Image (cartoon, rainbow over all chains, first blue to last red; front, side):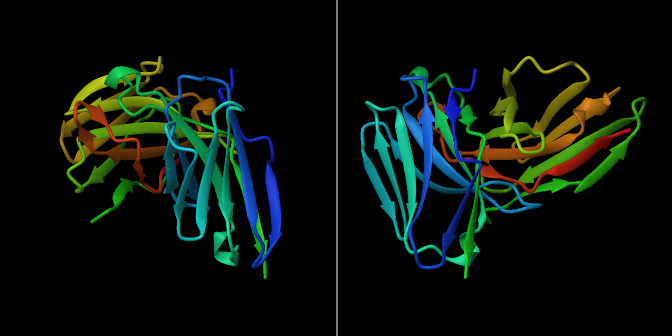
Length: 116
Length: 116
C-alpha cells in the first residue's frame, strides 16, 4: 500500500522556468511533510518541510504548498537552475503522540532535469 | 559538523560471509536510522534507535542485526544474506526533542551492497 505517491517519474524544465513537483498521500493522519533532494552516489538531503497546520512554506527559491482536503502537496522551484537536477523525494511523517520515532514514509521520487 | 559518514562505500559479499556496515555522526543526534533503498525505489525504513536503544524494527529478517554502541555510532551486522538483499543501505540521524524525534533527518551517502 503506497501511502505517499509521486506519479510523475520524471520532469524536464528549462533553466529559469518554474519546476513543479507533485506528491499525493492517502493517510489523513500524516502531520508533517518533507522534500528531500538526492544526487547520484549521495544520500538524500533535506530541502524544505511543512506542518499540516500550514498551507505554504517558503525558503528562497523553494516553496511547498499543502492542500489537506485534496491530500496533495507540491514543491515549486523558481527559478530552476541546472544544479537543481536531481531526484526529489516527498516524505510524510505521523507523530501519533510522539511515538512515531521520526518514521518517514517516502514517495517513489521524481527525476528533475533542468536544461541550460 | 552536519555530516553523517558511512563506511564502506561499496561492499561485495558472498552469501556465507559476515560483514558490518558502519555509520557515524557528531551532531549530537540521539535518534539514528537504517534504511534500505533498491534501484528506482524510495528508501524503506529498517530500524530506529533512540538514545542507543532499538525503538523500531520494521520486521527486518534476523540476518540483519543492528547495533548502537554509543550515541555517535550505528552498525549494521550482516550474515547469510541473499542476493535480493543487494541494495543501497542508508544511515540517517536526527535530534530528539520533547520526547520525539525531529522530522528532519540527515542522511549519509550510503553503502552500496552487492551479495553474490
